[in-house]
Amino acid sequence: MTTGGTAGQPLRTFDDQGRPLTEIPMVDGVVQGLYRLWQDGRPVMDLPFVQGKPDGVGVWYDPQGRVQMRVTFVAGRKHGPAEVWQNGHLTARLTYVEDQPDGVMTVEQAPGAPPQAEVPHQAGVPHGVATYRSETGAVVRQEQWQAGQLHGIQQDYDPAGQVTARRGFAQGLPDGPETAYTPGTATPQRVRWWQKGILVGQQLFDARGTELRREGKVGPAPAAPAGPPSPSAFLGRLKSLMGGGDR
Image (cartoon, rainbow, N blue to C red; front, side):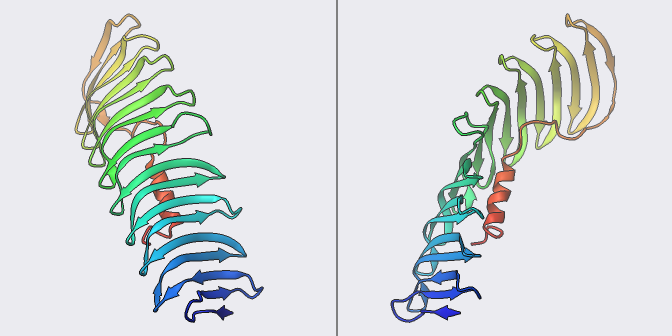
């Protein structure tokens, strides 16, 4: 069923049970005002429009009616603060500039806990020094990004702040020395040498740091080292909630 659509009345549609499906404010044939969507009688989206384009803070809701996402639009493009929520809790904050993430993306963990990740973005991709933290706020990893690829030094830390591993990257590939340290010390345990993703040799040490042996070329690079979850997952979630991120 459809109602409204006349001068001063929004266009409204309803399902077979009389529950609202859409509410579209129209002025001279152009969407102007708060565009609303429902599913099974529950709110799905509230998105303000100005002269036919999203403009203002749009809100998306989960099946329980809780906020799932907030995104700021200007003249039809994502531009300004955005938030992603899950089960009623804030999980990520980011800022858009002309439809692209730009600035520091903050990934939250438990309410009241320090941020899990802080990853600077530029023109839609990670760029700069990213920091990952444990539930207590201790830094567990820092890494350098350039134009969306790991480029520079990546370091892992133990709860006391001691470096446990240091790796070099160049344009997303392991490059240079990769050092693993004996726990609780600054003594190297193993050093691997990489050239553009190819392992070309390694050194092994005892607990006192005395070299045990050296080995030549070992093989290609393994899978990327395990670590904190990538904030790109939150960007993907945001896009999926928006139906591909095209609105």
